[in-house]
Image (cartoon, rainbow, N blue to C red; front, side):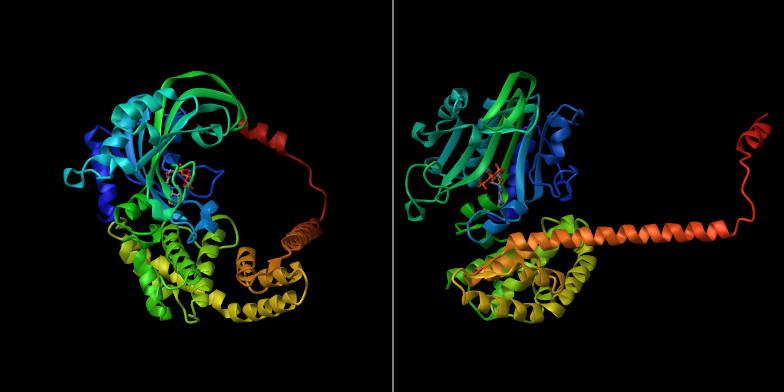
Length: 475
Ligand code: ATP
């Protein structure tokens, strides 16, 4: 089943159960403390917090998400993308735990020819919060094998906003990929064999004094209890399509195939190269989607994340042996794979591709020189007992050759060498304070010269006439 069909079934199912289906919000987070929309619930926060009245008390969506926190996992685990889509059903003071559990179970286990996902109930596992006996008995009532219901503590299975407000236990649903993927014993024992697909959050408490997840005060029950769920579309897709990971699914894999053609190498022959193939496929798609929502490469905030994604792609393709421009070859392939789900890509693509190709050109102009500097630094470092690239070299690579520090770290690590990151940060801080001082000096000078010129034009002191003039006009 194609990824877009899996999303459609989710929205059809919850539409049938009286949810208002809304389109994905932008990847640019409305929340000033996060750069990107990191979860399906983000656009619904005002409704969950009771600050605004929702258009309907049951809603569902397929939300575009970006999580840069997961960037180091990309390509190495089977399940982490920097861009992914989160399916979610929400209840704002309407249905609660029993229905949320029932809906999830029904959709997952209904056979595919009857509109469901057709998972074998024997392969599904749940985690529940320590105190949530209620959820455990509800899962059992649905027919879940009691041995497949595990108990987790506050850290893993209790949700809060991080501050005073709503909070509550959650229950996560996992799929067992089978003994060839790891040890038995459920998600508690092995999170690579048992893949988390869906998280159900039951917001029924008001909490305060949230010092940490394990140290908070439950004030009492909320008057209006909410349901907030998130299911990873790519994770469902890879399990339902019988693939090994999210990068091999229909919306992502075409970029791996394009990278194979460009490099003349085969995916699946060498694990180290495969990680690079997967990084390329993931990052190209993230860059495409982020740019389509209006972000452009820069040195700060979202633009910097985007720059890092594009530069990591170019670097990964180099490791695969491709030194010619790659973005013009890969970006259109990703667009073609995504456009059925996001038709707006057709209109945004012209501007997006121009900006992306320009970014690659700019980076390539300095890349070769930067790589030479890094190669020398790495070779020198290897001669020492504790091979480390100096902070000064990392700074030059950043400042003169546009290497994000993360790229330097990664390229050095590929060769088993560390980087003196502390010294690099120190040099960056010094550069920042120098730049600030320069800016101040400049502003100071400009201001003074403006006033000097102004003063020279004054033949005599000014008498302030404001009060008399004003009262004369005002009467
Ligand atoms: P994990 O522990 O596996 O990283 P998570 O606990 O961070 O997942 P949630 O924040 O509960 O995940 O997100 C809800 C769902 O979104 C998850 O059950 C998963 O299916 C999906 N998901 C989360 N992060 C990613 C990601 N980086 N790439 C793909 N899907 C994701």
